[in-house]
Length: 218
Image (cartoon, rainbow, N blue to C red):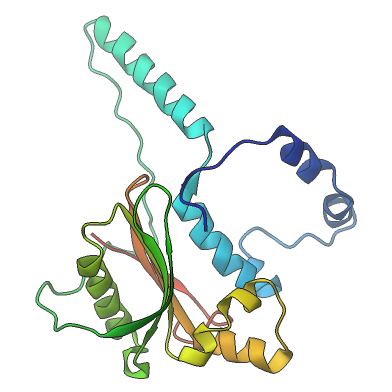
């Protein structure tokens, strides 16, 4: 999983906009509405949700520099700079578990280093944590455990066997039964990205094929 800025590729940009698959989907009426990826390919949608929150395009830097230059020029004229718009998640009020919650134990079944600091993990929690309150407590524990890391994200499962199937599930190399086992027991993700300021837990109490809810964290 990539963390930080994406490397631009003109070849990939052109290929993505001229592929036969894109022409068929857009021109023959097979394209599903935006946001319906959870119906067509929930595993890929789960991966993309994490990827889009942990990485940003290089043009973000250019835009920020241009905005900063505009603000400086505005101040030079003796006027207050216009307020900077900040994107906010309107799906819910930012939430944070109680600061003195007891320690929540979990098992790390896979871990990898993030290039600009921190770690990605696949973790397994007790099935008793399969509730909104339980996953918020897990998120708080992860926040405490990774407080010295620049970035952190975790795929959360409540069954070890299902967690061990993650890589094969993303590559769609599983049997139908194994895929169902994986999907039923992936119950959330935790993301804290110092580059973007994004900090949230995704709750999927019915697995990746059920409804999901992002809960912003402080």
